[in-house]
Length: 469
Image (cartoon, rainbow, N blue to C red; front, side, top):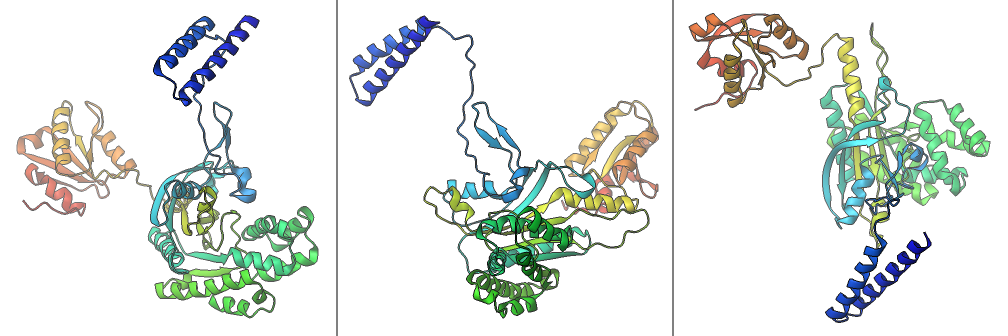
């Protein structure tokens, strides 16, 4: 053991000598001579059976300090070299790092990908540990509130197009919150933790929030009461104007800037025709630490549950805000790139749609297939393959069961379960007559269509554009 340790020390010293000669730009002959000595020593040393080989990486731990109290939901891991890593919590922090690494100062983009939360999953509420988000972001130096208004317009367009019910977008500003905490007497060190408590007001009562702030976080009761007077207010542009006249808030520079921008934002939202979907809500806090200005969150407006339908409780379905300082955290020179964006919770949207379809006893269609090529008798696999190939070549979304001799009833049942609207049935008599039996799955109506007319008939029934040749 001691002999091996001595050899390892000699290898180390010889390696340093070789590196030193290279740095000094010594002659090639001298370097080769010393490298030969190093190789000879390594050969004497031989392999270390107890030494494991690792693939070493140099990752950046980018998530630390970006999410406030939500940091407990980050999945922490370690790589082979013992470096601390984490699964991404959202798509915003990786986007900011991408901007900094590539020195980008102006971009508009969308991104759909998985994110991970170390949370207690609740399927019926759309809470998962692994799920997809769809993000849209605008980065760059622009005049105030124009990109922010566009993000809110996009959010409203998406939620309206999905037809998941009435929704409301709550809007606030982190500068207003910080100004409000300051004038209410919250110590600077408690801003973020009190902000996290306020953010729970959409789920629990003010009394519970107050008890947490006072009992768990050590805030004075009278300070909590002053906060309560503000955070229980919500409204539109009239509330913004009212707070601009507030004798305390109007004296705070941060709050005044935030209220001024919100007033401008409401003007743009009115021009976009969506101001009726927006509510200025002083209880909205968005616990993530990287937000610096306007913040927003879309929630569904609950409707009375119909017979057999459970009340939906999926929380927010979209959220976002302005994060002007995040890119600078990753830039070696601290150069800032103003950014604003939004995130749509894809799985939460799916949860809502699925529950509503189940309540209406409607089936979720899981395929885009327009027609199933089926056979009425045995030994017609070759004919089915020929026909499905013709339909594919014509741009028809078609499929067939991967069986030589499937029963017709099984083929029809498959169409009903998968939501395939049409069945093209091949039979011995149809082959002789040069026709295909086209069946509507919904009405069970069947018609004979000449084979050369089948493509156009399917396109007509599925509203596809016909080919003009």
